Length: 483
Image 1 (cartoon, rainbow, N blue to C red):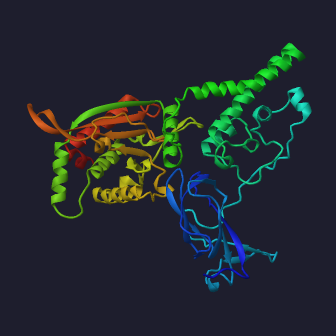
Image 2: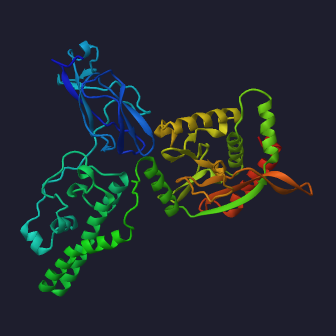
Image 3: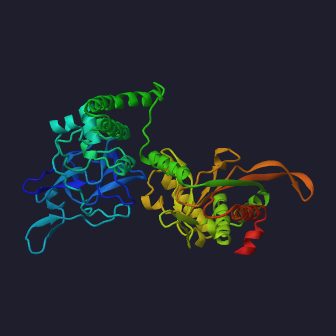
């Protein structure tokens, strides 16, 4: 195997994967140190909060180092591997592209420019980072009570590294932790994480915030009561975090199996929690006789040509209903306090995979016929099961169809896929006693449920939408008359 002799070593960093993603977990390395790689050859498989993706390296040459073990989480911009490129690497065939900066004569490496999951393998734009001066906890601050809350935690248990500025990205377990710290003006560079290799966990941030709150209340009481009371308050504040932490941890039963909420499952948990927290939802439901819909599908598939799936027919009904009740194809702009009605239908549908629940998106579903919808549902479902959905195929839906009948259940109250305004749930279709044309008969019955954002419409609109869907299920000719 050839190695670089007179070339140079280039560092390939985890690229910006877009869609607001800031971290990825290494699932599988596809190269070893010493392997020769070609330009744009996949070198590592990572899992983000959106999907599993293979990351191609924009350089060709010999792998001289890898950073991060399988299972480790890396922030965007962290080194992935280094590649020796030049004449000595693979006989000069795997040379990285180079460009000369105008006016300087200095060479810089460039990526191949090919596309990585829709975002490109070229170097990501530099991330702005505020330069902080070195901070030291002086003896005067400790005695006078003027140190920050995070410095107070450091005096209590040594979890702060205020005197040692951290260079490069701070290792944080999830974007949610970064947001929690940002909302509370907490500097993550002053914390020492309790996770593997110093990874900052949510518990570390919450611990620091409790300590800061206790320290702040201690200073307030001390200032009002005088110098002797101030010293006692500071001692109480120093001991408070340990007591608070003990009470918090005692609420969790000992033992059991702990599964980190990260990757796809963590993203789903965050989105569902946000939906429940922000959207005032309501649910209505109705039973419908699906006998005629099932007969119509059988007749369509007996005529030859591609088979039409049931979910495609339900999707076709959804898009027709949204055309009549467009209020449900909208979102709420909370900052502007406006309801934004959308002019296209990107239909999400729930798909259960080995890695958890994902919601692939059928783009422009309103412009597709039943055959086109069937093909796209099949493609996205298979891609989801393989874990190969791109972030673009998992975002941007405007309405979601959830066919939970495949799990053998009759009904459910769906949680809205934030920031959408509604979700239609479909239960299993089973033979049940039903009054048909004035007589009791056995019919194929399905329960339909609609959860909607009560900010975008009232019950009359939601009920009208659901009734129209039920009418199309019971009499497919209704759909044909309104197309």
